[in-house]
Image (cartoon, rainbow, N blue to C red):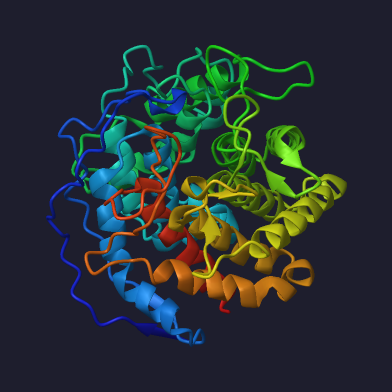
Length: 446
């Protein structure tokens, strides 16, 4: 049974977050273009429903705040990975049949060729994605409509957006752009931004896929997270494999599904410390065990596994089992490290107190991934549920009265990927990850 929240949800017109100081910048902190008006204001978020079988007061509290939390994410998301995570959050909350976990092929393909509005149209995610992609140069796209799937092949290598030096981050926008290719005609003017054609969006996604495939790789085939050199980041676990998996799922392409899981396993092999069952952040300048990096890896895997499951398994049973076993060990290791606030230290296995402040954003990513894992493999996950419930409450307790997730790591890595207690650091992905966590627990009904 589902109870409708009684709440008036006008889109909040609130001041943007204060800019963080930029003294010296890590490689990820490159500049990326904003939407033309520097914001995504104007997206109207519908009323939400919650699962009344979940009696946890923290879940009920998050349910009431979630539209405002997402509105905050819409206000401050500007980089490619932030907008990619935001569009994924909007899909999982408002259009779950278009996300891998509750995927419906009929829902995904139901709008093609039609000019009428359809109930499954992803208006919220499309509104954000369309504004962020408005500056894309579609001038060389095919002029005639045709088979959209064919446009994924033989593209001209070009990223959807400027990734600030990252090869992987722009991939996070790939699923939303692919959805625009299937729903642009049905959505029409409902998103408040002039839309390109379905053919143009599909062509752009094909270009992004080609750009990814021609990027730097290691000798064993691991795709780099950076454009100009080979570098592996835990972040890419949420950016690259889910993009490949979503294209594989929606086009019935087993090769892409297998590549998605292979890339996740290769990244895992490169970064997983099997003595601690924790992921290192990078293979170069930051080899510590970063909470958010562990969250990115686990959350990305859940999307890949859900895509494979929705596709009928794709003959990948042994590789799926390998990945699930790794995930179970990493989840257990992480939950064993919850601090007194029931959140994860920003960096684990460190003695410097400046590195170990609890991070709400990373904890949120891990908990959201866990509730998906609980549905996929309850036999492996059930014993960790009490710890996950404590961590869920731990992060909800850090949502303030203005719908900001507080005590979050600086996502730009301005002076290091650190948590600065007492500062009003804002995390665009932290806001979106709260919604992803809520959607995961709602789907698990536990």
